[in-house]
Image 1 (cartoon, rainbow, N blue to C red):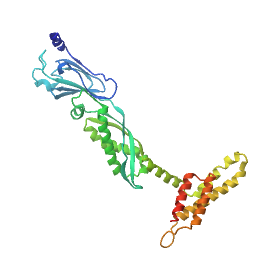
Image 2: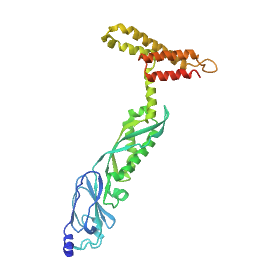
Image 3: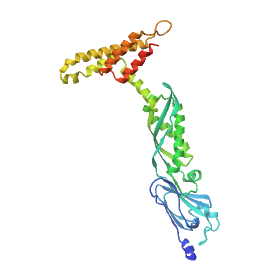
Length: 336
């Protein structure tokens, strides 16, 4: 039985790899006693490359095709002793296959918000996430720098390293870009292209090619986003009196279709104008600088009267709870 195993091992080996599932970057072909016989047939399929390692040294790299392993196809072996002696193979050799197809939908994101300087806000804490794609471009370099002699090396084994590389480069790029946060959304493609170029050398050093990079979203942490939303809302409202009059006028069609027709429009319009006047007066008094040493405190009775008017408008539905609370805080501050 031992003799038959010995003889059987001398038949021409057929060396090939068909990927099972996804996620494998490098695969070591299993061979008996790690010996490759003279004249073995090596088949490398499309989207693959193979590395022949003899006694721990890379002897050659093969692209797609079919090869007969001899001293002619592997010139490096011409000086190796005993390679061409049949039934004797003292060389401990390996063949490693590498998947060169695109590894798509690789996700990246900031685990924690990063702080960058901003022209408009001074400093912001930014979150970002997206996807990227890459492939093995230099199997020799990938073998020596990353995968080594493991039997199987997968995408998941490399994911953490690549994500950290992306986030680190992104932090530096955003800090140096000088693009305000409010303009970043309009420049996402440009920022992604710059980041891809910046990451290219790092991927190349690992034997990889960064094929695509996408920034899907840039955002602030939830608490900062709420503050920004309030600021945007106030900027959109602008002149409160004009805004209120517009809101009332835009509802005339709806009121006319209801019971009573336009009968209630006068009251609604009066309420809108009154609210606008009160809000305008409140805002003006809250922000107008006093002459002389500093801001003068408003009489308590005037402030309370304004708050009562605002509360009445809130009760009638002309003023939201949030708007009422904001203006009430501004008026109460005048009492200090």
